[in-house]
Length: 173
Image (cartoon, rainbow, N blue to C red; front, top):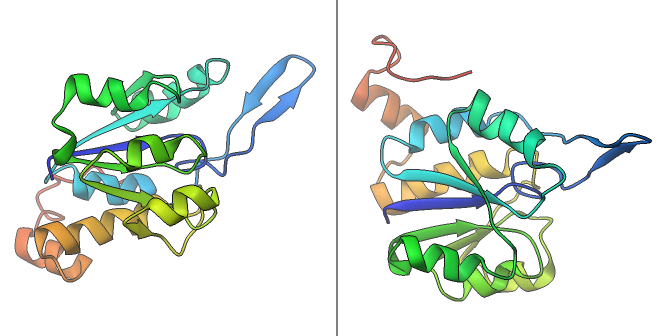
């Protein structure tokens, strides 16, 4: 596997949108996901997609500005074609939670859903996290990928084998 593509809302966030009279103002991102992604990015390319036009700038602030990953606005109905235009589908791990994410999950090499995903996504996913979106589900998925595809049995294996904490090569925030 070469690419990890994640939906933002419901995966990196709890899926809730917070509104005031001015409109959408907040999204809730959980702990540890950024840290686990910073380890996984040594092994594969990571990219995010969202279909949320009104909340795009909120997601961009966290995903691109704070974490440094590419974020693209892609309709939920066009995600499979968008991914297929950019990548070999067999090289892609996709993590999604929504009713239309099944369209992507049916096409990619490996798929992951958080525990609170739509039932159809859970049924189709190759791996379902024990954690829910916005509450360490991505962190759990990253550790699963490291074990399944890269042979790391634990986070300690990565730390000990690379000894990168002392060299400052990890950008853990």
